[in-house]
Image (spheres, rainbow, N blue to C red):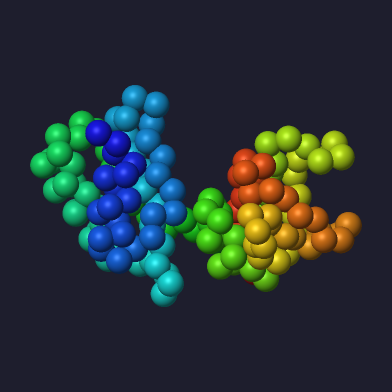
Length: 142
């Protein structure tokens, strides 16, 4: 059974977005990060946690600890739709392979066009193939 797919079904069924799922190497602890347009509060985390606990019991998912929380201000950006949704925001991203000896970039996300992520950096606009992005996060503004 694919636990991540099960978690995604439960989370989306409750009206939330699954931002990230981090199981520990032996599956003893699971971290679930959820989001919704209005923002996440403690009641949202409790609702999802209670529902997942019930579903895991029915599906015989063996685990010791479950953590449900918001992704935080430095939310990871994982899906192509996220890169479109957060256009205009500051992001930090890391590429799988370097471009001109550089793998880490910080700048303003411009959006997506044809599977390519556009970003304005201090060196100008740079375009990255979505598949080449290893990791990306929002940069919080205070």
